[in-house]
View 1 (cartoon, rainbow, N blue to C red):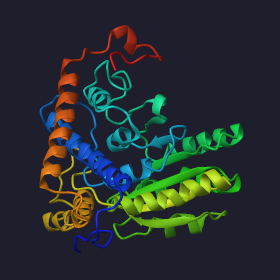
View 2 (view 1 turned 90 degrees about the horizontal axis):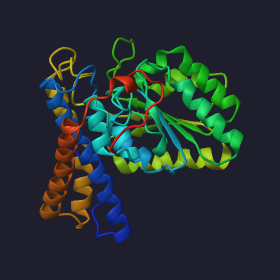
View 3 (view 1 turned 30 degrees about the vertical axis):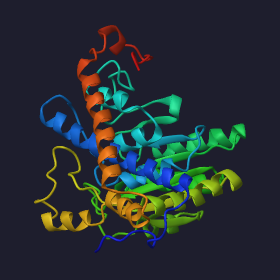
View 4 (view 1 turned 90 degrees about the vertical axis):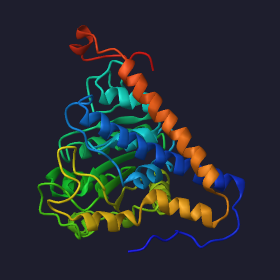
Length: 338
């Protein structure tokens, strides 16, 4: 397995393309550095509960979100920090929510697995495996009913392909022609299931449904490839009101959660290092360098910019107040100070 640029080296591209690539790189770097600092904060006891980091899978969130419009909606599972950041929830609001503070995007009531911000169309992380997949179909049905040409996107791991609601929802989405894109983030290690790292989820799921739908397997380490596949799925949803299943093959460098070792139990250190050779951030960086529109100085400046944002988010979270007890007992809340 070798790290290769997704496109051949060539002259610098037009300014719009260069800016787009920089924006993808910045978003992936922000997710990476944010998650690294979140892991440190968890180890120090500043973040409690469950914490599932997204390190290694950044190209999936960034490539998918880049294809969406503001009026689209996203429903996610519990490994959703990267999804939330890529969709536009501020790093301050996400970090404050991890800290359980009143200024968090869920008012400090959700924590790591339940980030939510309807203002950017992010309808939450959901902790029960597969439970949110029908919700995404419902959101897509609402868009179709209103005739607004928007769509729903649903993220879940490969282990959710074992859940009955997954198959039921795909059947309904196909039968009713719903504008929804199902994103299987297959990182190879669905916990507590019989799905192996080599399993092809598309073969497990779509071909077993009563109503077929377009499906693709996508290289999840290449943000440009993810964006291209998502563009096709979005076009199908908007133009034809048809669902799509994208199985995006990726890899997490860290454990399933902070309680799970990165390696040494069910995978080796060598395996993790081998996959790091196809790091999504490195692949895009190599492409930009090969195109002669990225250099060490620009890279250093971007790293500094991202770290300043993450440092600010941590400071904001630590300085933010705890939720008021009266707010904790209310069903409706308004996050403060964002």
